[in-house]
Length: 139
Image (tube, rainbow, N blue to C red; front, side, top):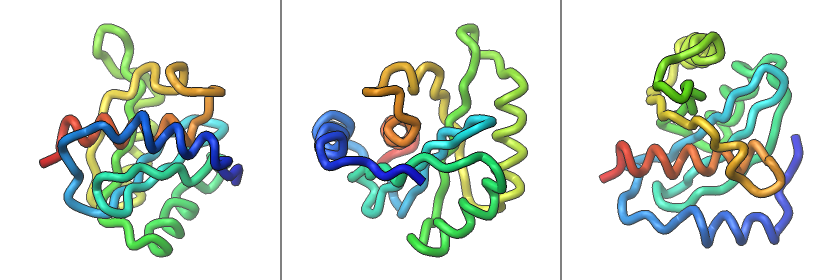
């Protein structure tokens, strides 16, 4: 797993947390890809922290380990919908993964989140997913 450096973490904290809404629980965000996945979490519903980038191999077990370690109560999965809002094959894989993990979850449209992040880092994309979830589901 690749760990974020302090400078990038500071950028995430300044730029991604300008939300007025909060998520009601300890949350995990998954930016799923067939080769690698970016992960981030929110310990308090307002702060987004990158966890790192992990291999997609055995992703279910890796997510379950993080759920246990961080006492995660909710997972937000980014769905890379097409420009017209339709879902492709990757969205079906993500929905299948969410069902297999078996934790309370929701989906957010994260189309283009990776291309909008610094250094194309998938863990920062996962932080964006938490921001999207906050706007969509936050209180």
